[in-house]
Length: 537
Image 1 (cartoon, rainbow, N blue to C red):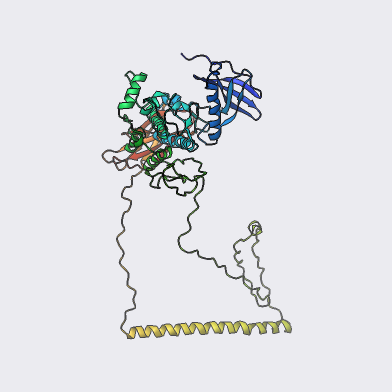
Image 2: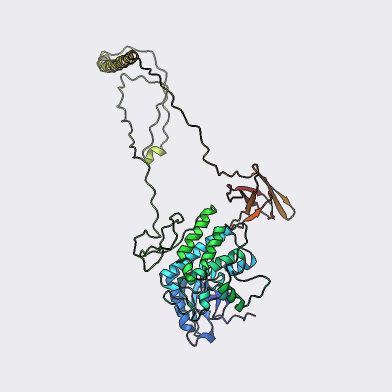
């Protein structure tokens, strides 16, 4: 049975609210910070742990988390101190959602969400490794969930330097690799890679990798299977074989056979996302000093959203772009075509201008004033009968006409020269016996380049039937092995994928609108675009 929590300490500037959890070394309480006002989680070392090295380990944890807590997938540390009763404490970001262990016990994760969490946490572990820190206790219970549904790695209480190879005390058995039980125990970056793989397996299977339902699962049984048994199959129809291979390599018995780094493991998960046509989750890594290229990374350059690198101290240093550098948009194909605007027309001669009832089109706006001023149309009044014109304006009009007449004469002469030259070329062509009739070039038959197209389902409708909402749809091009993948649309963004051989889905009815997305899946793994159907409550 779990023990009751210890008394919460009095902390200046904080108001105690309720207990959050208990552990072997510390308790966690919910407090309200007064300035700035917010809810925070306060981790307090137990009074009976003040002797020995526990206090120093607690201080070391505070320093490690403070160094790494700017990472989006690591719990943020706000401050640390010693309470009036002598117990050290840490003030941390409050993550209100259940940790991944509690959630995995109630429900298995969808493949899409498990891959997203795996990539994000792997980025946090890689960041710790690059700072010279091993976590050594990665497991679902140590991954909290923020209010924005992002994972946050915590509990660096037994963290050590990446150079440590002979200390592995404190690791949780179900997620520990074989070398943790050796004599002496060993640990390194690939030890954390094993724990990452075991954690992802737990989210997908609902149990730790070597836990067997209906059998004895004592510590000795788990250690024996970890050291000798093969990684079990996920046995999920929506999990591709490539995901199983990623987990098999991450949890290889020999550390040299695993992924060489946490970022290499994250890249492998990104490749599975691409295979499943999921959105590729970015890997968040701070890259202040470009490290050497990892020669055993299996990176083909197709799986990254951000430029990232991995660590190999023995490889030659290669300069790579920073992880935080945004890609610049590609330059347009071909040379840039300048834009030439026609010169503005010269002011017309008012004495010779004949006005019509058609308003001239407004020029394209070029300034903010042009865009905001409404130009009224030109209104032309009926022209009165001509009246006698004074001699002086008539002389001005007569002076203007010869210049305009000369212009038209020049243009007519140029057109005549073009016609004569064209006629001369045509006569010579006919005289030479050359057929100038254009010949239509043969056109190739159009080719269907989309040979792997999968049609979408049709006629997706739903009806409310008691406590259930039943959706049905039609497969207009049925083939052997066709199945359907569907999931309820959740406003939180969570995706719980279901697979069915029948064109029907039943989901619990809600008071609001219930929506599902449905995709057609061929036997060879190709999937159609999703179709969404909704039913109002």
